[in-house]
Length: 165
Length: 165
DNA sequence: GAGGTATCCGACTAAATTACTTGGTTATTT
DNA sequence: AAATAACCAAGTAATTTAGTCGGATACCTC
Image 1 (cartoon, rainbow over the protein chains, first blue to last red):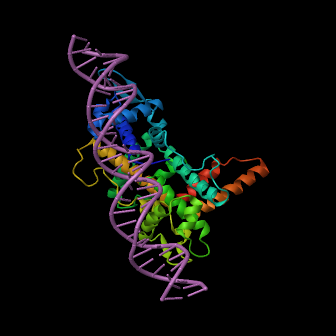
Image 2: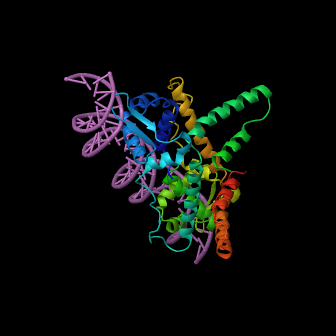
């Protein structure tokens, strides 16, 4: 699990699709303008998103991309993994280049962590991300109205929900 | 919050320290050998870890580094942030280069996600990471003994614990 | 105090990745 | 036929990562 600006671009673009793609496909040119990402770079990213069946395309005038599944069925880990495909795991995964004892242990610990992050991001769908905003603003309104309750608890609640706890 | 091999190196090195540094400081040369990371690269990483007061150094023969706090008090987010210091937030944070409406919204959504990841990693201490291994092997032994219960629940349990739920 | 050890420090470099550019083609609509 | 927008490949600039080199400084041991 890697988390770079590349993944951010992909998630941002997918969020744009989720927010604006309710009626008909959205062209990359539109996303490019709104999110300030170069068109050709978007093309490269969407080629991978398409291969991973996260988006579907419509060619020709009025065409573009749409999410290929319900917003609830697409999670952040899917998007980031799709776009990072190719380069990973230079560690001693399966290979015999790992000495015995301690080295393998720490590598294993890292892998555990990496898996935890993946599990965490798998629990956050596009729907959850966009809805959460609503949850938050509702909460902010409630604070203003009641003068009670900070949003730390809401944060925990959201995390719990994201993890399906 | 960025998550690259650089952060992996840092976490791995810190895990090595946590596991091997119980009696006296550990030299970077030792970590370099065990974890197969170049000495000079480790020096660069530890310069940042030291500035962020995650490790303390002892110079001269028999010297090296030790964790500057209890294992429970050092979390993964601390380590990764320390080592990534400098380059970040090319987005429209605070600046006026963001158009109105949709663009700000998706950027905001990304920031929310980024914050969630940070919160998540803040909940995972070096102690938790190393202990978890013990938890897992205990669980594996239990499975072998009883033939019952897969480790999905344990995974959830660990996540819940990491999040302080 | 001489020699060895290990942190500290800065500048430079190779390799890899990222973000973008260019110049097309193909499919589809009007 | 013309315009639109996905598709595709190759190349490039910029950035980041990982490592090298050549030292200086602090500290311990003999």
